[in-house]
Image (cartoon, rainbow, N blue to C red; front, top):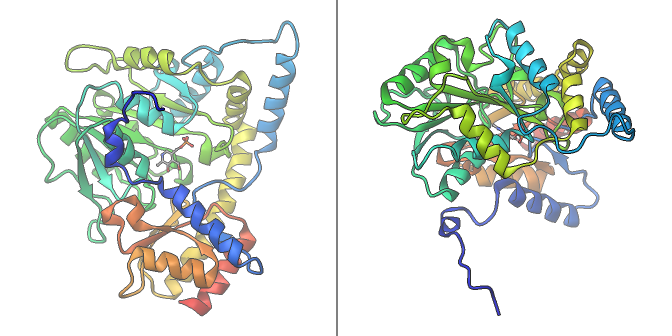
Length: 396
Ligand code: PLP
């Protein structure tokens, strides 16, 4: 006997398996049959280096505090502790961007923020650049929304502009540097999107999960472009910048003056939604995130980022030498590499896995515009990257 409840029919719009779950299963099957050959994981974008010592120290101190009568804390404030909201606002301010600490909302990661932010706005359709992080598509589909794609191509450098987009309100999902393409918008490109949002009455949800990989001279926030505060929410993460994929901490920045067409404060709606959905992020986690933003913490995070950047540079040098077309690898931990002539992305993925023991991600998993490419992640052990390059020398 089963309960008389029915499935959310929007599940029918999704692929049966989440992309990275499927890849994990393929990798596990390979390991079972090739126990003698080391599996090289350049697939899922998960960090591999341990937490920076300053972060560990702060979290250990916070845990000890929680073990004392005066330092114990229960439920955290729904929007995050003031110390972390302040530290994030200060980092924006250091970069010359005006953000108030009351405009910062702490979350358990950017993935939660994407879903939470989309849930605030009726059934407004989504407009998303593709290929993109598959969660954008799945969230839109599961919530029953329509989704319009703007395709990145080799010709537009995987940085499409809104030239041919409908002049009606949309939630625009942008990510820069992008996953999987590793390409980043310049100020000019972002200005085009901001103008489009103004003219069409749309709202930009701007994902900066990979901003730490960009040099300070690049556009690392949508708010670095004037007027964006009227049309954009930004959200970021400590996952890739500070190694928090397992700890879980992110944030959204919602300008206090931002309103829906019917006059509701977007920040107030977000707070209301968060209060329903979650009981916040632990004190220990937030102290760790605060430490990652301290001067010493930033230096240590930067060392880890340098390691990943060097991994990316090794892969980039190899593909350059072999004359493969690729994007990314410079301001991002990802390289989006064109498949060899006559091969689609699943065939190239299979070749790399079956003959090279190298796990990548087929571009088709990021949307149809990703067909013909495979994503290599530089979040890997150096030895694995070097070995992957050696194996590919013989293979490609
Ligand atoms: N946004 C993008 C573009 C991502 O690639 C990822 C993770 O890979 C996330 C968000 C999720 O970040 P978090 O770990 O903070 O949930």
